[in-house]
Image 1: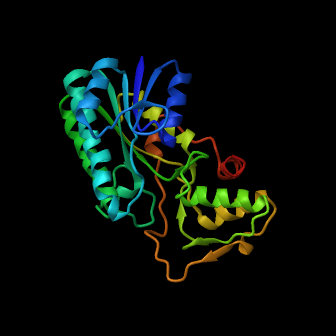
Image 2: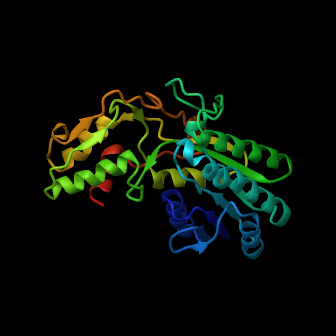
Image 3: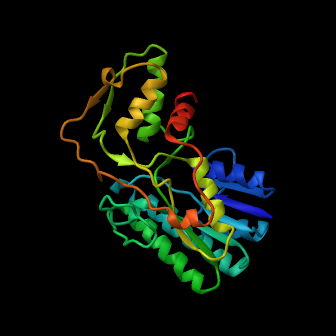
Length: 289
């Protein structure tokens, strides 16, 4: 068995790669950057050639620039939307037996603060959410053409591989420097915002669980537990024995995208998956990395 992983240089790609190898699956990691097979999921010819060459059992499309900024409009469209179409069309034409995983996001749903499931209403609130919504409808269409296309709606998940522009990693790196003697101040927005802080390795296991059954094709994959940024600050600074109040300044007038975002993972839990890593363990993992 083989697995093609588009977006192998990101945290999701990394943990999927490790998990597939652990299960005896040969992996072909594809990315525009890093020490992987060079390739761009937005280029149909490249996607087609890789699928023809490897005839994979699984194709995972986890490539994306995870930002909701408007200036990422075209990159989001090319990588997420066009990338999904490229993968689905190439599999339909050339490797119909493959199982395809398309990444969805909690950010593409209407968010009232209540737990979000795969049955809830979409909302096009950003270029990122638009691209994700398009990808889901593409997966649903290709499912009618015989492609086994799965969608996992992922909520916030973290790991030592997170990029520094994410608040989880930014705080963890600052705590490392402060522990080493830095007197820096971290500037943050609304630290009462609540979201999930699942471990990316656990989310990869949820993806793997989803694609290895044939009854459910769309599922929210998340912890179902929300914590605030303040909770994260307290845990990370607690590891080094310091008071976060001495190193944080809040930006006045900051307006967050949402107050609370949390998943309802009952469907994926019904398939036997649940996360293993809890928030204190994740904090130790990231501050100690």
